[in-house]
Amino acid sequence: MLSLNSVMLGSKQPSALVAFYEKVFGKSADMVDPDNGFWGWQVGNAFFGILTHSEMDGKSKDPGRMMINFETSQVKEEFERIKSLGGTVIHEPYEMGEGFIATLADPDGNYFQLMNPMS
Image (cartoon, rainbow, N blue to C red; front, side, top):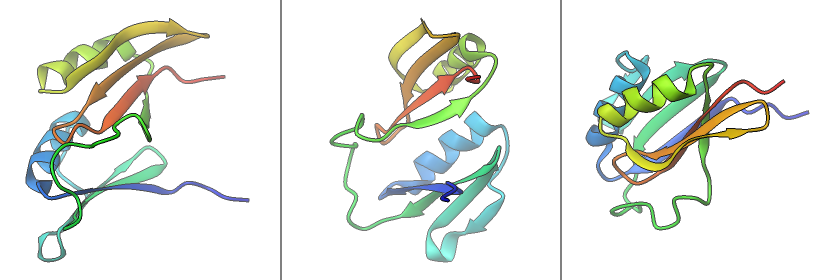
């Protein structure tokens, strides 16, 4: 049986992503290794990392190919908060199943979604 324990985003501009996600998560990175170009946060049961990656250049070319989902009971409120922090709106909150879902993008153009907990 597999268990997802982490997601890592590679970037040539990790400092912009780190600054953005520090505001999104409301805290500094839990793990910092700038000499090796790595920053990471424990977010719920998973670890979210950003690393310097020489092969990444500019905005994500296929941002919808893989999306990171952050679970929250306050999708609309978190959507507004993250939008005010500079998150790019991809899709305003809308009803889906038993709750809401919204899609934003980070400074590299990576899509992430806010969604209500699913039963």
